[in-house]
Image (cartoon, rainbow, N blue to C red; front, side):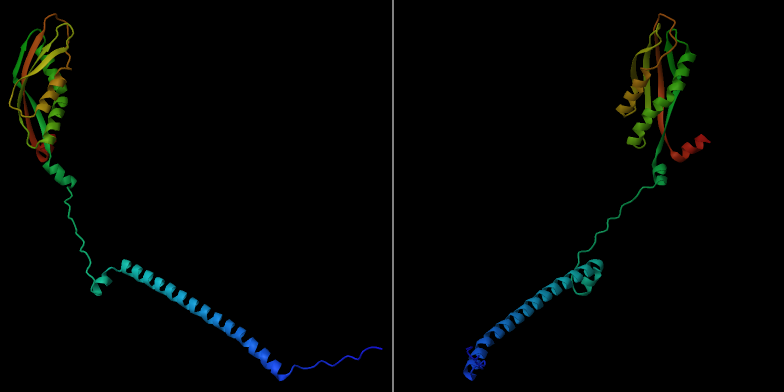
Length: 217
């Protein structure tokens, strides 16, 4: 015969109280974790807010530096250095134009070389000599003086074999060396066996750019 099933019995009130008392600490633990998380999130948001506010303030004062002065913060004063820019007009007004005049009356020739060949050579090469003087004038304002030269021509080749300054009151040694260098490269018609010695003086004087323009007209 089958044993009759017993109906389920309900726990006694004492057991129910024991179970209820045991469950309450778990609820308190869950409640404590939630409060801690909220506090951490709030603190993090506060720090982020401070950083964002500081960054915004710095950016504002960078864009508007005068606002610091309104708050009583002393700012270093900007030092403005004024530079004088020399214009092309001023440069032209202060520039000197070099003039080199071979003094024809000072020309002396010993030897068979024709006088016309010497005067033509001096005239053709005067620009190179004047360039030497112009370089000196660019270095030293109002540079001027007189320079005498002497050079020797080989009769068979027509080449200048020697050139020296004969007398001078011109103060710039670089200009004088440049002129002698160019004269040593001169060449004349060479059909004679005898050498020729040539002497002549040059006048080197500066004029203002305005006067140079008048001469060019």
